[in-house]
Length: 65
Image (tube, rainbow, N blue to C red; front, side, top):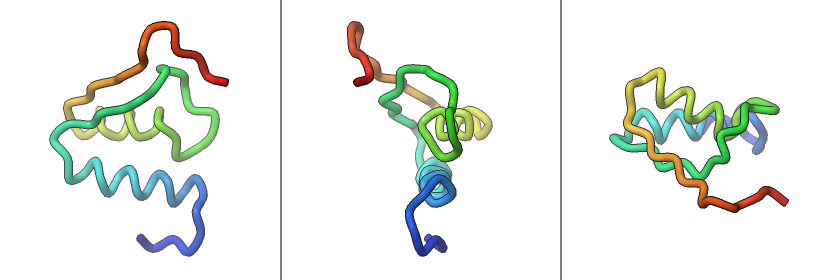
């Protein structure tokens, strides 16, 4: 990846790189909208835009801490 440091832009670029090469995105995600760039919501949106199959996993009763 072309990023020298980790951060939102690097996370998004890595997600896009993987999504461009996958048939199915398995996302562990609570469905919350993005609060910053490069998170799971952005990865899911990118996958949807590219017509990828998406399976969201968030067990009932699970909470963020």
